[in-house]
Image 1 (cartoon, helix red, strand yellow):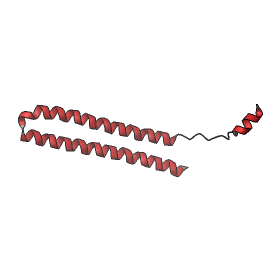
Image 2: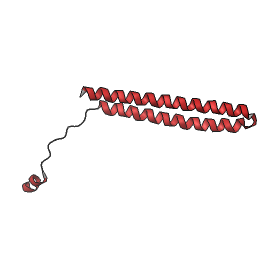
Image 3: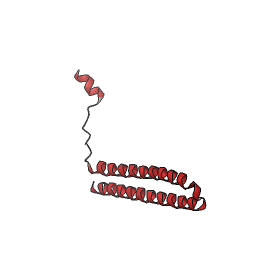
Image 4: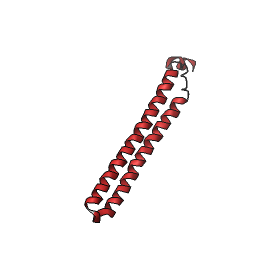
Length: 97
């Protein structure tokens, strides 16, 4: 049981790490492309900047959602599972009535 608990935390940690790395890479790529576009066409700087901010907010939202999912996974792993009780068969229940 302890092995599964450790693997659950490991999976949650890797998931959170990958989400943060992916979000950082996406925003970095977005900013680099926006700066390159503004350098090539300075008169479109306002439109490019607005689009960049909206896209960055969407990327950050996805990253935060992924981190919340991994935290929920870590919390779910740490809670003990309910043990299944022996449920009498349907034939035994009908005989009692």
